Image (cartoon, rainbow, N blue to C red; front, side):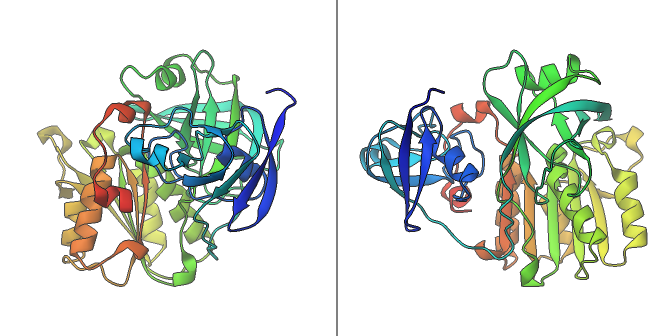
Length: 355
């Protein structure tokens, strides 16, 4: 970035901040203490959509599915991609949530202190963050800058807040340069450039409602952080975690959650295999994870808060099951695992967009 900067006025807050040339509106807001709604941070999900009232912006690499042509003509933009080309005034939907912690976004380097296989296509990576005062809220994520890979990659934090190590779960994406590097090249002692925390996926404790966590594959990372944090702080309402994978070899942290269920009367853990094999000798729940949730709760979810984390198809199916069971928008919170490949996928359904 050069020394040029622009003034960004954020309405309806009436708050002005400086944006460096080449910096996105979302990044400037997060570092300036203004928390715009956002999720994927890659121009794919449309959560951070804003209106440009005055000034000129470069819309950047916004997906044509997340930002339609007519929206561009109407002055809409995605804050995670849009970069000011002049002084700019924007209008954004900004909600004040009593459960949200506004943790500052930091840039830092962290040493890799451990790498372990968790499942057949998932590795755990642990980073040393003891040298910085890094605060985050359970459910948030960080961005990694991976050597030789263009752009940043997002990974949810799997550890509970408060420790000196950051835990990441990395699923190998076939053909994905970032995950292939992290699986095949990265070694203990290497250093990675990290920024964060990001995201507004967090528990709404003030509701005092029992919680249902539904995770698919490596989508277990955020729920692991959230569940461990809740239990460590003595949350008393009932917590249920369902983790869906294909086969027994895809299941991980099974022993940890079984121990937590034995030592915390308010915690229930349900692993689910969608494609159990004879050699798995599996006697637990089978089928899709949302189907297991329906059976577990007899099809009625009213009076709960639900948190879904995983691939978009799982999120879609889970939302439909929860809504059919009388749980609606205000009590359903999601974190979809999107990759750059999703930019070429058909547009998400109106149901998913609404969530």
